[in-house]
Image (cartoon, rainbow, N blue to C red; front, top):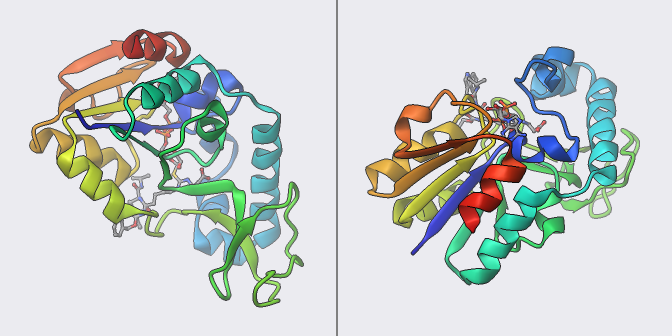
Amino acid sequence: MRIVILTGAGISAESGLGTFRDKDGLWTQYDLNEVATPEGFAKNPQLVTDFYNARRANCASAQPNAAHAALARLEAALPGQVTLVTQNVDDLHQRAGSRNVIQMHGALMSALCAGCGHRWPAPPVMALTDRCPACGQPRTRPDVVWFGEIPYHMDAIAEAVETCTHFTAIGTSGQVYPAAGLAAEARRNGAHCTELNLEPSEISRVFQTRRYGPASQVVPDWVA
Ligand code: BV8
């Protein structure tokens, strides 16, 4: 058995981290073009740095919930058979004990040098004057994938999706590509696809099995 799990912001909602497109989501409070695009960062780097500093602080004070813990148990019970692909930039999967985690949209807890590409653990509060430990340039940016940028680890993700027997999406609205296209790809490759979400997503029709409710309830039930 080879299981690919794709998670989105909904799995961290009950840990107190906001989602993006729910009624009080992040994209109702911020214009994504201003805070989640390279153009936005170029136009107002301080606004973007402040946006990610605030989310990093929220993440540091949040705790993994029962859904994160259940996925860590699943991975431990099926060594080498579970690949966890997350769209989330929080570190709650890792803090819950998941080991094989692919963060396709990057990580809040990582800093990136826009000059030389070096990555290092982000300070709690990133500043535009922070210098890269490798090249010394003051070109620090959040190590996240903005709209228009290519997601990380796409080759590894494609290989996992091509060979998996089961694909389960958890807590994602299925609106952001290429992540939202992975379920249909897995289905085409013969995988059994399951959606675990609060409500039907944009891509619900792709899934053979669908369970709706809060992740902290439906995910442990699914893992059991
Ligand atoms: C790409 C940054 C090319 C990090 C994010 C024009 C120009 C360029 C590209 C495009 C373009 N037009 C369209 C595109 C493609 C674009 C895209 O998809 N746009 C959408 C809006 C149409 N994609 C890109 O730009 C991507 N790059 O295409 O490059 C390429 C690609 C491949 C190969 C070669 C070239 C880059 C996309 C990444 C953008 N970065 N974030 C950050 O700040 O976090 S996206 C952002 O949305 C987050 O990463 C988030 O993870 C992601 C998806 O959102 P969800 O996780 O699904 O969250 P959402 O709020 O939407 O839904 C939450 C769900 O949870 C809901 O269904 C809700 O019901 C449920 N829920 C709520 N509570 C609970 C719950 N479920 C269970 N329990 C609960 N308690």
